[in-house]
Image (cartoon, rainbow, N blue to C red):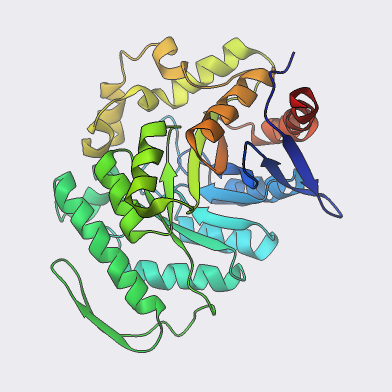
Length: 351
């Protein structure tokens, strides 16, 4: 029996179903597809986006890493090349989840990349930003500042981005970044929205103050409340939900444990470790139960429905489903044939 899932429905358009939406006291909650660059090569990511569009997802979100978290994940393509491939072959909305514009890539270069992506996607692009991880940023040898400094750097980087997005020749001199006589010649009429990732209250306040929306990795009610109180009310709120469809729940659970034991790491550790080998060592004793306790797995739609409902109840209006493992097509078929119809049927159950 599917639990009552408040007023879910699927919006259809020809020639294929498009935006899956969940209504829970307010309209417009979208369910999208999250594609992990740590697990898939560039061609596979583009193909997954194409198949996600065919399955009816309205948007995809792509992680932006230099390294995978652990060697077993095995990939880490340059996200801006992947975005170009998706832009050339789909009509999806695409966003980064998330880009760090403070060390490895100067914010002026991120501004150019985002502006170009927005042009290629005809305005269907959003720029997700965050303070990053040592794993990806230390590679250029500029060190790894404490979190307080990284938050300040991110806020200044957003100032740089917005300065360049205004058009014309611009210069900027701040505490962390300098831009001299720069102009974005390739740009869409409207700049891409900037959504800011947050895990704690101070980052949530920064996201509300400096961003156009919020990105989170878990359905945290307190985070959303702090974000809205700080000025984020009415702005988009995105969340990632890891899932693992498979014909056998036990095998899917083992796959999550194999590829994403890092999900069990608490505190700031995931931002501080330097190498995939360090993450492998840190997660060596993570149990299967610890790695998978919040991850819907297997062929039954009910755990997925509950996970999506938790996100909606927490206040998120965009829920990105991240299928762990190589079988993206299997999950997308499950979404199209089982999970999306289950969302639709739940509307009837809820009355």
